[in-house]
Image (cartoon, rainbow over all chains, first blue to last red; front, side, top):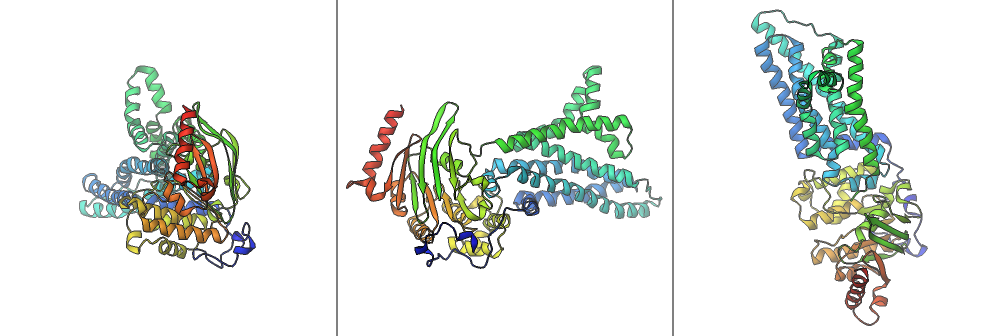
Length: 269
Length: 237
């Protein structure tokens, strides 16, 4: 009852309105794990998010099974197929999460409950990244039975040449693409603009790549969709790692930092 | 306790608020009255720390809102009843609020009962809600914690006469238990029905403040309101 004890003049202590509860201690500032729980829940509690999750799960199963029928028992190829769906839909989910508070203006409520905005933003970015890991695991789980069945049906041995490093690299690629979606969303704070930028980035890379030697150099170092290639294969040289680092800085670290600063300073109207 | 101290706000050279000072103490329901565009919403958003004042300061319970230990639990806010994700259900909106503040889940049901939203209505996406239902949901959200201060922007907008009566009884009860209540409205009769004190704002400046009777000075509050806001418009242009 300490929360209400100040600011009440003695004469009014006796009459408490029916809205008040008893037996609850004064709540403190929301701890980070609580914000994380709330933001994770927000990721899946709207109609569109529920539909998108179901579509993503269904699409993953369908893509892997279809590829299994056509391409045979090659798990590396099969999971790669699911990655195509992930590279598009998961980052869009991330974009919708970080821009949603601004497009629906719920930032007003969210930041009124937790004025330390950087904590809310951090809590908002983690769940989509974890979702990318979970989706990758799901795709791997679907891939195993599809590979086994495909090997049985086609009477050929399964090609299990998909080691832990390749699995990790592929998962990390999915996480990085979601991070790119988050970063673009945080910077632009608008879902349509961010989705357009994210989805047209590969086409932009192709276009720049055709602009002669300079263009090719730019793509090799700055196009995230190109530089994650070796990572997704789980086989990376030092130069390739450096290229990945540069493009991650360009597409993820820089826009996310700028986006954090922008969202923290922004006046909420 | 709410305190505005010489708050001014300039947007691209335009003065939205000009030296606004007033206080709302415990036990008081204060009506923030002024025409559309007078600066009411800007003032309330400055109070909640969502907008920075150009100069001056606003405090809640003696501190800047953002510096409060548990602002969600101690201060109830409704800044825009329309600011909701249309795909979320009413119950979900309250659940998220209760989770953030750290309240038991049972509080959501209590609040739904309190604001008169049925279980069926609470289970529907808010995109299909009428303005009146959104207002009830928003007021419920503001009451989730046990607020010592309530800040409500145009809460009566869209409520029917019974709804306004309900709100008056509710706010009176809260104020009687020591709550400081500040609600805004551009409609005079709403303020007359629910507030003890009126802070009249026009063109970003406080034009008058006092009890409904004091401001009326024998005339109707409406005449005072029209006269003062007309003067403010003339001097502003």
